Length: 406
Ligand SMILES: Cc1cc2nc3c(=O)[nH]c(=O)nc-3n(C[C@H](O)[C@H](O)[C@H](O)COP(=O)(O)OP(=O)(O)OC[C@H]3O[C@@H](n4cnc5c(N)ncnc54)[C@H](O)[C@@H]3O)c2cc1C
Image 1: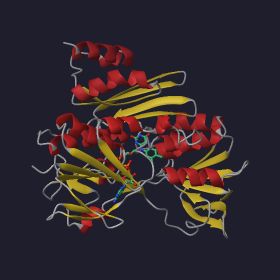
Image 2: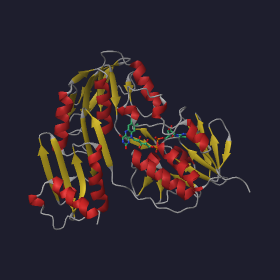
Image 3: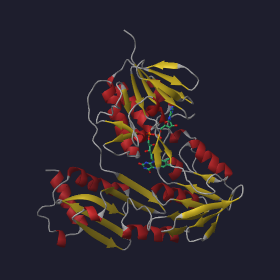
Image 4: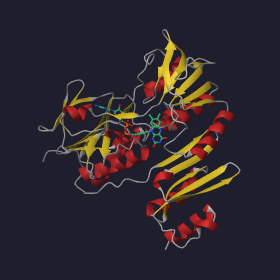
């Protein structure tokens, strides 16, 4: 019998976890990961959180080379897949090799949304998606440079902190009225902004950028109110666009991302998708944890063991500007029945309640404290019978945890 060949396109975290799941269920088959980047799969998150650490160290790899050898997973780095023929079950590499597959998984990830304004193509306008972007940015920085960060989401704020720690002057520009508006409510965002300013960054809120000024290289950023912020570099972080070209070319159904069902199957037989490239129930998750889980589910299904993907509660663990915090689940007060806030000094916690259970939390505590809240939210443990008006959040979560163990 011909050997089964599982082919994974893309070499990010979804690919690694899919390959592991395939190997866990099938000890014999051959597994190949094709990645256009030259590195072994690495922890992409480090590109912002650890921008000035040694990004080429083995510590940044998701798995060391030995693991791939032991598990007989072939990583074809520096090799892109440019075409798929689902009828013949063949993928074609950039240098024209035809690779037959038994099952194919698209883990092509996403690209950063590009900035579209005058000056966006000037030298020293950066965005960070891969190792090459990070290396290029660092090689172009000079001591004393001023950096303008466009986009005050999690990635923008964490990148800003990396620059501040490395001694650069930073301004964060955010068009929305507050930073990290998807994860934080107004009070939490204000507290964080105060700390950011206290640690030396400049923050401009509610101001879009009109254009980037300069002739050859960046000289400044002009805001909508015509304020000019002089700077030598711009780093923008304004969202992602899933990499779907390969799927589209093969007539696989695509909307924002490659459409998948709960088994991570695409519209085309024997072809699956997972991670930032995939869209499930109208949503591209764009998160590290989701990519891991989808990769696992895809790999398992590819071996013929049916398992359904269940989207987990979104968790953001943030630790920058000397401020650990987390935001879990639904934190939009308009979609909740009620919420409770607790502020002692600068330690802010707010829980969001709907249908008698906790559906979201924002807290300026470390990651370890997030676990109880995550359990409470995932298990939708009822608050019925708890005197919310006369209990602290700590007491409420204590009672909820007791209930979870029953
Ligand atoms: C700087 C930064 C910070 C982040 N911080 C966080 C965070 O704090 N928390 C969080 O949850 N998420 C974070 N993310 C998002 C997270 O990294 C992604 O959700 C995750 O990496 C998605 O994994 P993936 O395997 O789907 O795709 P990717 O990691 O994008 O990997 C896809 C790979 O496929 C390759 N590829 C694409 N097309 C082809 C092709 N045709 N042939 C061969 N190879 C191809 C790409 O080059 C890439 O290497 C961050 C992302 C960035 C860039």
